[in-house]
Length: 307
Image (tube, rainbow, N blue to C red; front, top):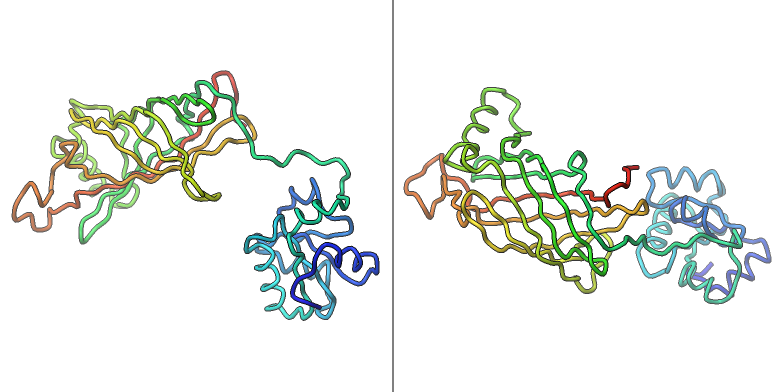
């Protein structure tokens, strides 16, 4: 068999009953629509080859695999895995399911669900503070420490499907450390972070971020940032503009999720302890100026429940 077949060749092979046709996409996608007569073995799952062995135990059988578009690595990865496992007669459907549809061939089931991306309404969304997470990371040449900071409140306004405005509040009294196992060392680090040396939490118990807008990132793909977020970050008595890329995604339940990693120079916000540009001969007390924050948030319109 050739390395690829087109939809017309596939139709002839199906009519002749001479091939095993395998949809290598997610089971939920297969349940909503697939080429008649095909089986399903999701190439993203660790049990992919086990599923294939159940459907096609004969390593000499003719197999055709297909994905959604034929333009990604999905079907090619499936073909490679099958050949590595000893299957000797594997081909890919050119153009995948989309080519089959474009040729006017039928699907199972005959009436399918809408597979378009989830959308959300414009308006105010309130942060789910129990499920949203902010993680911090600081380091020097010898060590790296990381932990979490509790989000106490937050909201975001969507307009035309993009974040337009919002405000997020971090409770600096709730800063934690996750890497030090010894309670004594962990307590010492947290006392240091909350002291005047770093965040002076007694006088500045909150860090705030005011979202001022978001611009779409061109040519993004799923799993890469699709928005450039801009806003005003306030730490202690200093406020500066900041921008960073983020993934913002609508969910089927009407909520929105966002994920971002932001690195910034802490000394611009008067967090100067251990900075080599502020102090001299620091020795083991030298701390990198740049810190990183990983953010994962979930937000919902008021009155809607979490799933």
